[in-house]
Image 1 (cartoon, rainbow, N blue to C red):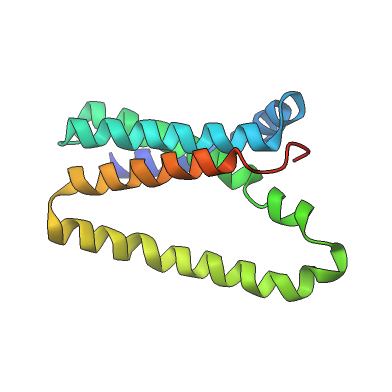
Image 2: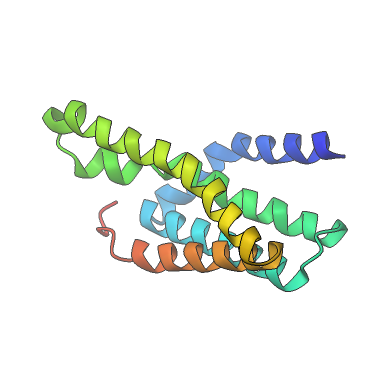
Length: 143
């Protein structure tokens, strides 16, 4: 069962061409906001649901759908806002941010689980995703 869920979430990346068509019709900013909103709604539903049994898997998959959208277009704001001649020097900063994010998520999870249960962690992730969706509204429209 676990292998099937992992495969299903990985298969979502095969939808990349469809995501790019949506970007062409709307904007990168809109897809980023929608991706974070989907993640926020999914994590919020998991926070309310609590015990992630069969119905919880649906929310896991919808959250992974939003994350796959972000995986497709998440680097675009960096690539479009940084001048070509500055990319080599700023790539180090961008990579450091990505590496920090890989450490921060499990760290925040550990703190949340220390303070409570998974509901708290899902709620925290939902709040962060919602906050990020709101801040993404300030990305330039030309993205």
